[in-house]
Image (cartoon, helix red, strand yellow):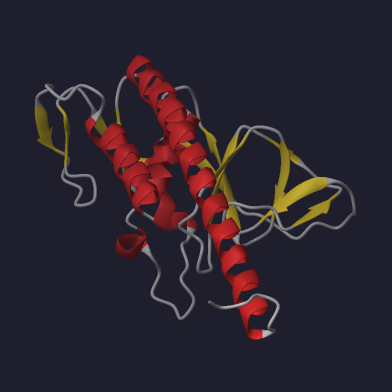
Length: 211
């Protein structure tokens, strides 16, 4: 959990403050963003991306199907083509975006997002989506949910295109390394849990002598 929190903080700092720690800052006017570099702009999302609804697939096949959350849960015959960012529409895991470059399909619990033009690097939008303050925008319903309007009205920090490219490259490298460490730690935890269960089983069944 500490590694995951560290990863989230690195992403947040990069997409809202940039990579230059000495750059002059200004107030963004957006609470969850805070201060941004003076050369950056705050732009409403609807001018940067297209946000589209998902739907239930009608045919069988091997195309991965996604809903709210980062993992596919079945396959189908229809497909859309990436690159695309999937963002949640409703559900407990709507705060988990997913970046997809190949073929995919999304059901109605997730929106698929594409760039309107080259103003915004779509991969940067993915990293921004990890940092969205969903509680601030979320529709007040029993089930946590977000609408197209919620997402379209978001104010996003946008650096110049070359800086976007540097930020994305930096985060791709850093997060990959952290994910590797997290995977190793989770594997170790799983091994220890399995050993713990087998040890308990052997002791309570008398297969292991307690000294």
